[in-house]
Image 1 (spheres, rainbow, N blue to C red):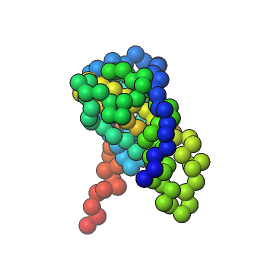
Image 2 (spheres, helix red, strand yellow):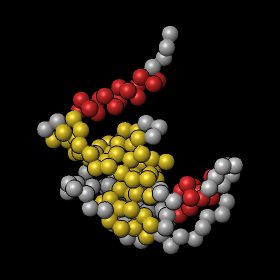
Image 3 (cartoon, rainbow, N blue to C red):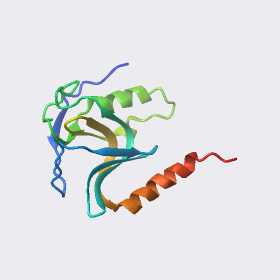
Length: 152
């Protein structure tokens, strides 16, 4: 598989809230939506929501550098990767599909969120910085559970 040369680099994204990306986080994912839960206070959960194409969650932690080191990414924080090798790889791989057009990948962005113990990488058209109540979060979870509830 041919991967296009990219000279990838990252720039830090500043969010509305000053999140401390060192501490714990929690993800909830359906087939299309990824919620990165960052902070809960007074029944309000602050999160990032991605309508994703693909994501990786876990390794590496802050003791290990990024695989395929991306210039501009520091230990903790939220970053957008430009000229992403991962997007080039996905585009190249998808060329097997008979209706593939490279333009279908032009709106995708590569995001990296570094924490102390995990890293989240997401390919998505964008993200939303959102707030929701525990009740709203449970509605999302219950809706997804309804899709997998066995019918007797």
